[in-house]
Length: 226
Image (tube, rainbow, N blue to C red; front, side, top):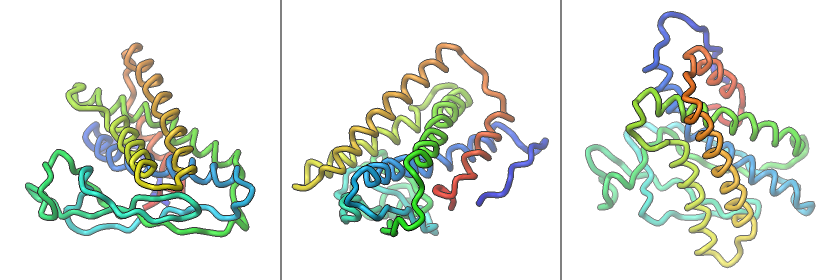
């Protein structure tokens, strides 16, 4: 569990940017895995769920969007495992363009767990909503604070996950659960874009204290604790 955030004069836009950026991948992966477990819960034959097991990485590491990744099957889901590439000015693992790599600071592993004390679907939907609700505000803040000169990092993340799951469906013969996941991720992405457009249209100014409060609220969720 992350330490509570105490608002003081040391906080700044730059600091909030760094914190919000560091939460993008954990939030997106937590949303994807929560959807997986909701799908599993709705399948009465399943008595297990998937737990995310992040491992901190030392060194400058990235995942290549072009290189093929190994898939494992867990709880009837195919999951693309993180293929770690060593990156400095260029990738030392492959010849793909540096722009096709995204930096990571932890590796995701997955564990099948018994649902002896499983959360209810209502609990998981609340978690999903909490993470999703914060996403457009973080995305809006990050883009506004750099002058809208970059692509939306959350939108890029949704697109990346949808492509990963779609690629799995193209490659595997048994992919029903992954197809369900693609559809649910697409719904989340569409909703995210709508909420983001509302914020853009209102030209809202998000107070720094509000961002820190949202960061603290999101950090309370054990599922994305590193």
